[in-house]
Length: 457
Image (tube, rainbow, N blue to C red):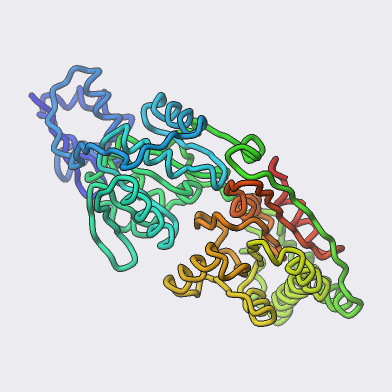
């Protein structure tokens, strides 16, 4: 009897005749479970590709009612020669069966690798991105590249087409209904995917072809392995390898500034208050759960709340100390003819700098249209400087930027590499510069050491 495959809200169901149960148990038990409610085998939709290969190898006839994706003929509207590494990345991905992660620096053209994959495989495709800004960016670039109408799911829009762009948040919500609709799924900034929630978008999709794109693949907080959801890393090029060729030459400069006497006294007082509480409660701040343990315990007593306040105050002193602001003034004067992005760790500092220097600010609170208009004017040169916290760390296209000033940030290597990547888009005679300003003799020294553990620095 012919086996039947169908898609059911994020899962694959296989129906077999009763007399074939023993064969089904032997062949499917590694991936599927028997669902007694419906008298059929069931697994996550991700197992679709594995199932078809297994049935073909076993020479079992089957009817595929799961597949709802279509074959589409895509062609580029304008001829363009890919860089050598883009071709190599596509070849490596295709050689691995059309599944895997491509690691390329920011500005190296990861999205064009995805477009080439869409043309190569000729299947309806969905692109998953972290933000609505990136949805708009991908949507515009795909329509320009192929000359077709593309869909959007997210931000109040639900328009599904053969080529569709969505966010990670919308993907995991809607994929149980869309999961049979696409034969290729592309994850931009794929390092977001392994979180248990976002991973559902990969589990609920049957797409036999999967492409992950990122400049920083390492997941510092762990998560579900890429191999299970998209495939292994199949190709990688570093910033160092491409600098001076397809990326701009660059240099990084670190300045250490001194706290004033008053700032030092206040910092040491707050620091000791915070550390006393951590030591007395034996909180291990260097561990994965350290910060959560601190927040939980600080909420239980007056001393704990004082320690939390002290932690915030010590950070505030280091993030906007007087010498940092004076050095920022000098750097902005030095680079008054350049296109400069100022990065901070917090919105409060962003708004202070915006007011004091009359610089446009972009935070997660900035309306999408306002943010787009600021970036448009920045790229055109109307605004030579913008200040931001973390919104511009990832993905947004700002090719004219050539100077970055990091006033403060986390200890994340990924964040620091992403900030460097914002200024590396190649241009004639361009040399990019990243300045990092650190308050000497404070916790920022250790934070800086952590985030610079990358060959780009």
